[in-house]
Length: 364
Image 1 (cartoon, one colour):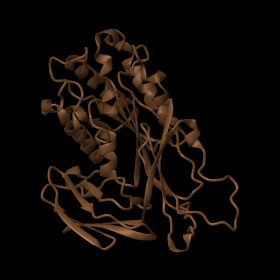
Image 2 (cartoon, rainbow, N blue to C red):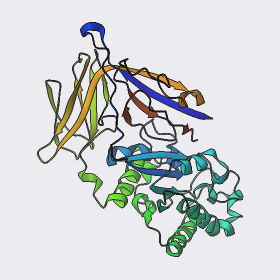
Image 3 (cartoon, rainbow, N blue to C red):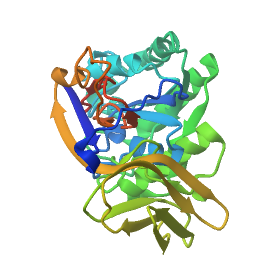
């Protein structure tokens, strides 16, 4: 089923009851698009919303990247597995995402006894999956992941013995196709405590995955990151008339100062996170800048408005453009801002009334 969720934000200008004209962003640089392909570990089974590894990766990378979660629980890489990823809409949605980068994290469900009997096809099926993505018009760079470790005795039929055999085949695919490898097994094998059911990582385990993928993509150490949550990006709307939290990530002990609309609030990062709360804001269609400062870094998030944020949900009807198809040139329209989210793609703000919503595949 297609699912589209849009955050629609409008500002009503009280002076004279008039509406301001909407802004356009056609000249902006498009973000780098990352498709995360996988099973329930990618979906984030057992983890609160927003703490799956693709969401945490988005927070680390910032607004210059767009991370899509195309995981489906229980799926196999093997075509002859009990529930092949090949047969899922998420597979097609990942291709339609036009990714610049593809992260493949599959294999856990292939270790189950009923699937392992078909393991002779693993190498070829993995090769074909990679080549399917490489053949896309966007010509993405494909990263293959060594599967996460499975603390003994495993669970659900998923086991460490077969995981280790899979790693050899993943490495072989990488050698044959000259692909970069992300070693999630090595990252997590000394942290069995992050696998409460001995298969699925908790939010801390997902954070370790996100950190490892972040380093693979950027060459930077995730532990040094200072970042606001991806909600706070250029063209965002903040809700008027209510306390508004602002949050993000930073190394423990980092002093953070947030400034917006005449308010300045400071805090100290703990457990790699920080959060401040702005006092209720008045509606304003005048673009403002949200500033986040540390001793070594300053982040400026521009073109922020304050108004009302509305949540709209639906299916294919939400793919329609907002507003009339043919607008009268003499009429003015409110400064709409649209934020599209869903289980297949991470949200981003866009200014303008006529921008179409994207279709997002429900994964899992």
